[in-house]
Length: 300
Length: 300
Image (cartoon, rainbow over all chains, first blue to last red):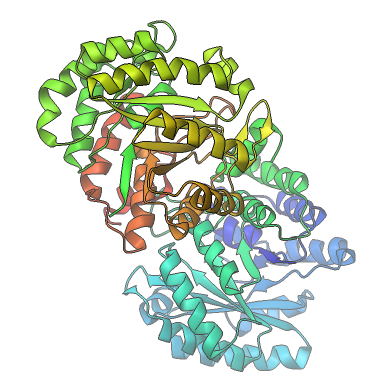
C-alpha cells in the first residue's frame, strides 16, 4: 500500500489565481475524501492578506471538521508560525504541517527568516503542538534546487530532515519545489537518506515543472519510498517559471502506482470527478496527460 | 551516445490538422538538422488523398535531397507499398521506413491487410530496396496494445520483430502507438527481446498519451536500449483519444538523457528553435512541460 498525501486544496489552489469559494473548496475536499484519499491537506493558516486563496481557512476547516470527521482521514493544515498554530488549534486542527527549506535565500524570501530562524519559530510551535496532542508533518522546500541559490547538495537536505525529525514530526516531505529534480539525483539523494536516516518517515513531493515527476517517483519507489504528495488534476502552477506546471497530478501518480501493481486505496473515477469539479471552477484544463486521456476515452 | 530518430515531420505532422506548406516543412527539417539530429523522418509516400499533410512528399524530399545532403544525416521516408516505394526511389530516397503491427485488426483498419498480408507487400518492396541499395527501417505498431484488440502480449511482438529482421531492415522500432505502455510491461518486453533477439537493432517509439513515455524510456535505457524515436515539441496527437497527446517530445527525451549523463549530439537551444517555429505555424503550444519551462525561463 502506497500512501498518497493529497495537497491540491492547499499547495495546488494556493498557486491558482482564480479565487475559489469556501463552498466549492469544501465540495472538492469532500469528493477527494469520497475517492478514498485519507490524507488531504486542507488549507493554510496564514495572515489574511498574504495568500488571498487561504483567507477562509477558519471557515473551511470548520466545515471539514464538522462534516468529514467520520471519514477517518487526516486533514492537515499548514501553519507558518505560532499565530497560525493558535488559529488552527482554535478550530480543532489535529495535524499541522510545518515548513522550511534547504536554502536560506529561499526561506528569507518566503518567510523572512533564515533556515535556522525558521527552526526556532517551529520549535515553539512544536512544543505547543506536542502538549496539545496535535500531529506534525514537515516540509523541506528546495530539496534539489533553489530559484535563488541553484543546485542543492544532499548534505543540506539530510541536515534539515534531521532537524525536522528532532522536532517530533511523524513524517517529513522532501519537496522539489521548482521541479528541477532528475532521476539520477533522486536515486542518489534517496539512497543517502536511506543510509543516514532511514525512509520510514520520509515522503517525496515532486513538481512536474519539467515533466520529470513520474520518472522521479519511479526511482523513489525502487529505492523504497512509500509516501508521495500530489495534487488532484495537477492543480497549481509554478511561481518561479511562468506558465509552467506545478505539483504532479494525483491521477498520474495513481496510474503509475497502479501500473506497477501497487495499491493506493484511491478510486480513479471518483478522483477524476473531484479534479473535473475543481478545474471547472478554475476554468482550465488539467496538466495531466493521463487524466485528459481518461476523460476523453472514459477508461484508464 | 544515444541515437534519437526525429519523427516530427512525418509522424508528428501527419497527426496535425493544420496543413503546413512545403516551404515551412523544409525550414522545420533544416532547423532540426542544424540542431544536430542525424536521423529525421521526412515524409510518407502515400496515395495523394489518404493523408492530406503528405501530398507534397515528392517536392519536400526533392528539397531535402538537394539542400541537406551535405549534413551527413539520414532522411528516411515512410513507404506503404510498391507504388510508394517507386515514387520514393524516383526522387532519390536512400532510406525507407516499412510498417506493420502486432494486431490484425489494426493493420486491417490502417492498410486494409492482415499482418501476414502486410509482410507479403513489404517483402516485394524489400526485394527491390535491397537491389537498389536503399536502407530499410521497420515499425511495429500497437506493440503493447491495440485500440481494437486491447492488450498485446510480448510473444506477438517478438514474432513481428523477427519478421522485420528477416526482411533485412537495419533497425526496427517498437511502437506504443496508442500510449498504453507502462514501465513494468516495457521492462518485461524489452527483456524478452534482449533474450530472444538482442537489442542491437531495436529502437523504442513511445507516445505520451498517458504521460508514461519518460518512465518507459527510463526503464528501456536501464535494460540497454540505445535508440529512441521522438517528435520535436511533441508534435502530433493521438487519433484514438481525442485531445490526447501523441509522440513523446524530443526535448523531453533530450532532458531525460542529458540528466542521466548521456550524450545525444543534439543542441537544445536549436532544437527548441525548430519546435517553436513549427508550433507557431500550427498555432498551438507544446505538450512538453520541459520545453514550456525552458521557453519561459530560457534555461534547462
